[in-house]
Length: 387
Image (cartoon, rainbow, N blue to C red; front, side, top):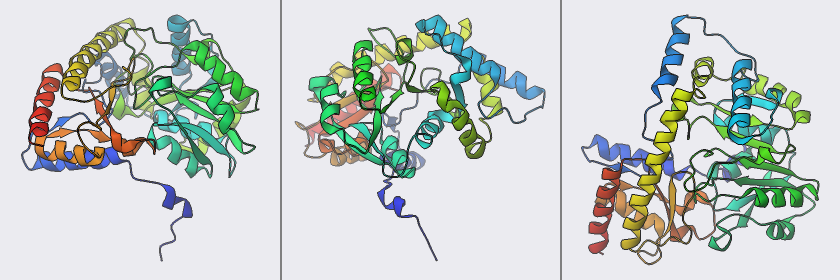
């Protein structure tokens, strides 16, 4: 007999992966699909990183590492924070994880008791609320809109806070909107959370993918926060499944125990590969790619505006456009289906990102080359002209 846990009734599918599955089906049938749906850079892993992995694997000694990660990698991450952001972080506070998802799992597992509430911006990354539920917490949405660049405010937090609230989770740059929190805004949110005895988790997974403004970290100003990051986005290592969390020192031993049981250790080849992520040669490649993303954004944004897509805010980070499609269609899911079936352009409807006007929004990722983005806009235009 099936004895499925009750929590599974609250776990929704990751809709973008369903779209990706349909895109692959169409491609298998011979269709040309332009992928603007998944948050995965199209660039290959930098060759310096691949070479580091190859050199390590050639030795054949692929064993477990400590549960917290390679000491050398934790030290390299700490140096990166110091050199790029002027933040002095002890390597002991850095826990290397199987992707940023593993980092968020650890942060939630070590802080969440059954029934604890976490405040999450809506729209926001869908897995966050489902991970909260997986640890028997309750995800409570904070509806955000363009008036605050789709970011929560201390006043909104104060109105939503209850005796059961455990903390607040924010993202900068944010998925799906690409908007940022300034240092002053993060500090103000932290003060509002700390005044209520709560915890602040800051998702910095898209850190480094910033346009027109310097990248930053909450760790420059704050210590008693959890900061989640990833090698997937800026560093271009999606399939290597490696991330990290910087935790307050008091939580590190407890997180270590969880990591020992959850994962044993992160991928050893991926960790040795990531040691090359912070070298000058690699960082030069990554900065070239960041400029390419900026050019893509500057190509796609005006092209979609001309077609009737509306953008209440312009993204300053990540690689997404969060488009209001209410002038073009009654429902973003319907439009997304039309675009993939009739135009061969895959996008993500707003339903993935929460309950705050999802039918009015599409997330469009500029994770392919400029020529393909121009072609995507032309294909979309043809579909829209047919009504």
